[in-house]
Length: 287
Image (cartoon, rainbow, N blue to C red):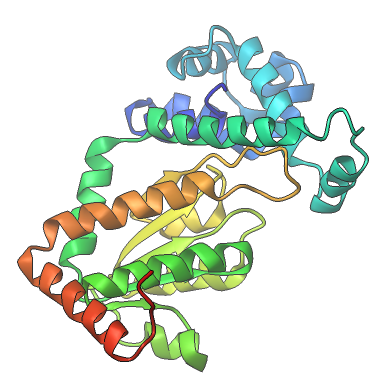
């Protein structure tokens, strides 16, 4: 599976010249225009030379700008359809095609993880894990489809220390969770377009308070990016009716494992005590 445009742009954004960044930003913000209009019209709209878009395509490892446009057409075809339409497609598959769904879904998930790893900046991942490991508090936030992964992340994080928490959990208001955040703290947010306003506002408040902000999203044009010090683009291609979170969970689990590696013997002892308490309270049953 070809690496999505957003993933390529995010991976090389820091190395691009200001003009090439401007061209990349235009394509990311205007995927339909890019896929349907000619290069000269796009360049005129963006107030850039056509050659700038060609150089940007080459910088992102496309053979030509036309190849980039074809890739955008493919992405649009799979993303612009609403969940209900995609679900209807699945329901109306022929009996002969239905067994192939497992293979298609498996290939999409593996492709998403491969694309993520190809475009990932190892140094940024290491620095992000180090900042999370040193944070006094780590607040995780996600809404709608992203609530599940955020909850899972908070569950894993609690094994590492009491400072890991899910925003708004247990009936607490979001404002109560964010109160007191400062430079010693961090926020890890998960959202995908259409992004939840709650998540965007929480990211903005955390950044304003000086906290280290991390964002996991699937789009270079996610509005929460404006408030993220560290961000990762997680591909979400799928034959299913909803966006896939497989690559997101893969990255989240990797990040937390990297934090655990930095946490020392105290964390090992804490995990051991938690497991002992779980058994004492009969919360778990050994099989």
